[in-house]
Length: 167
Image 1: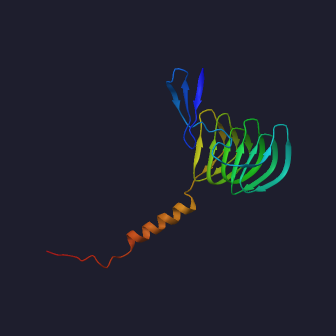
Image 2: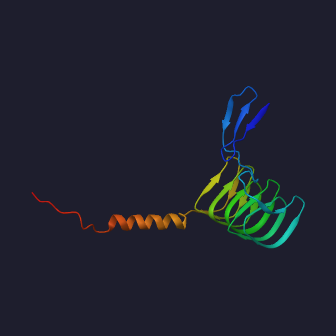
């Protein structure tokens, strides 16, 4: 009855068989739809205790107790249960996370995600239906701060080609 129209690199919309658009939302699921290669996968039923450090994209659908350190992407599946301190570039979660998340780029919490802990990230998106208990600290990304400071210096710098005219 419902079909998803998928255009590479674009949002996905849900349409009925008659062709009418019912919802125009980005259908983001922790998966590799955007040409991200998953370099490791902790599957459903797998329990892992320890520290994971990696570059790239890792998807977790099992149980993890420990720490995750990456500059890349962490994908947390709907049935995943993490009790961890997470430091990543981007975190996309549909599962349950107990612990603190520090992200350099963004955190996306998709229903039915549950997060008990704090988030520190420049961008956060949270769907309706997500349960979040904790604190959020948001600040501009380092790159944006540098661009902003450069812009302020340019505005505040004295200009030698401006002459004062008095009448």
